[in-house]
Length: 155
Image (cartoon, rainbow, N blue to C red):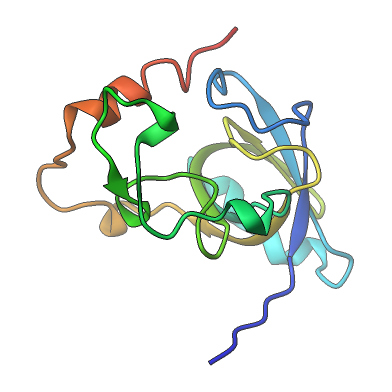
């Protein structure tokens, strides 16, 4: 089976390189493709957060990981499968982030703390609804909390 997608828009951001940390405080614009009118975003500003699904288009296909890997190459952390981490070198190079909605301006959605770089193709935007959030406790290994320690900090 083959799946084809067209981006719904692109990210406009000050960051042009995908670095691992210090995404906190960043503001980005998601500009919808011209095939969408402003009504495609109607009502989104009533939500506090949106999940943005995007494509890691600048990840070299030759660097895709399909097995286990030490997150960030850190041998102190266990080698875990690609589906047990959020590495950008994923088989389909798909990323997703829950970010804060700041405002909408016509066909543009302004968000805070989207960890996608300038020019990144956006595949979809979904409002965050409490009914879709995890039910019950969230469990994660200690290495993942260590990995995220600097991720959302500001510089």
